[in-house]
Image (cartoon, rainbow, N blue to C red; front, side, top):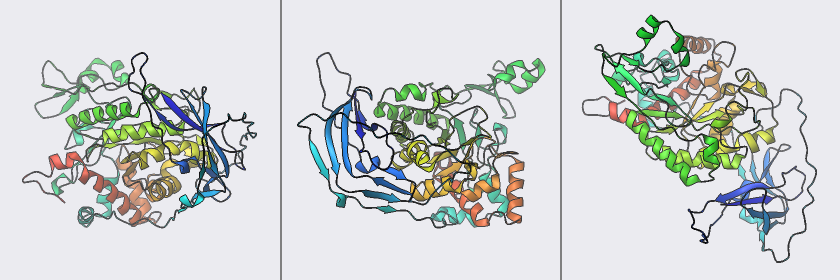
Amino acid sequence: MAQLYVSAPNGALDKEYQSLAAFAKTEPLAPGASQTLELTFDFAALASFREADAAYVLESGEYILRLGSSSRSTVPVGVLRLEREIVVSRHTHICPLHLPLEELHARPYDFAPLPDGLPRLTIRPEAFETAVYTYGNLPACPDDERVRRAMRRLTAEEMTDIVVGAGMSAGKNRFQLPGSVGNTTSRFWDRGLANVALCDGPAGLRIQRRSTVDRSGKIKPVDPPFAFMNDLPGLVRKAALGNPERDPVIYQYATAFPVATALAQSWNTELLCQVGKAVYREMKEYGCTYWLAPGMNIHRNPLCGRNFEYYSEDPRLTGAMAAALTRGVQQEEGYYVTIKHFACNNQEENRTAVSSNVGERALREIYLRGFEEAVRAGGAKGVMTSYNRINGVYTPNSHDLCTKVLRQEWGFGGVVMTDWNSTMGGRASSAAALRAGNDLIMPGGSGYKREILQALRANLIDEADLRRCCGNVIRAILDSAVQKNCIDTPGGETP
């Protein structure tokens, strides 16, 4: 196991003593055996965000490369020198603070003298080109003829049906996957648009292990899907659960993988890719389109109740693990991960109301960086916004997060969905979520639809917002494997 860290020069911006830049793992080695590893990293990725001008910059000076088997055992192995400051990218500000925030500041580090004879390399400033991000309005509909053709037939009420989930009850869905936690609508099945199932994670596919099918075709779980059902009166339990001695049984056993924290301790991206491939095979077997994983928030506090679902306190390790898992799951078109919880969901207590108050530099460099890697390097097709607020704004309602950062900076082209019931009374707004760029409201219900249509009639949101979100959902469905298997068959009608 080799880990490469970099100590940035003491400059105007506070820096950590060393930050992870790259890592690699050997094959299993016999005693006395060795293997040569190659560690590479993008020097521009070492840039720090300067809030004064909303830019990522590489400050001039010496960047010390440190190699070791962990962050506690590194030794200097080389020096990269940058003779002048480089502006890597220019942005607009996001998620402004709504309350005063006192941040901790580090003192300059006193680095020990470097050993003689270290390799030294001067980085040429002309090797860099500044990326400048622009933030105009997004198109009202994805650039896809199939989507435009389907959208021409839809009223505002029908588009609302598509952007709001169909609930958690399997009995309402044309395509049924017992144990899925949500579905898109089946209303347009006869028009050639399938419904797709969303299944929870994060340590493998969470679906119903045993279900029965009665004579009418109704599917019931054999094993209680929720713990509270064990305490229901006998007659209620009998009505809610299937009887395997009377009706045929559907078996859907899925693999339970180690939790994300344990997987990350392997420092093995190939292993994570293999786990993703295994999850993909089970998604394909059972008909799952969206796997609601991986969870990838930062281990900010050891008391966070969801830490086991998340990889690490280090954003680079988090991003590398999630990107590798994503590539494994999404190896075939039509199966999607859903990276979550976007973003700053770093506590469970009061997570539906708390505001995570954070400066823009920390937000970008720590809390968003892993998500960025999963999108840019992994190609994640789904994102789930979190319950909490960031600097006073609920994440589903944050145009800065859902549109500026995710789509306009990172180039995300998939579906953004809410966490379950995060836009119910007193929380985020379903209508404002669509305006912000959150495409799919989950798990769904008539109340969400009424709110959106009322906001539309009151001109609180534009029909263009609704069309854009609806188009993103339709495109994902049309690309899904379920669509191809259920609708794109001889005799089936396609949009």
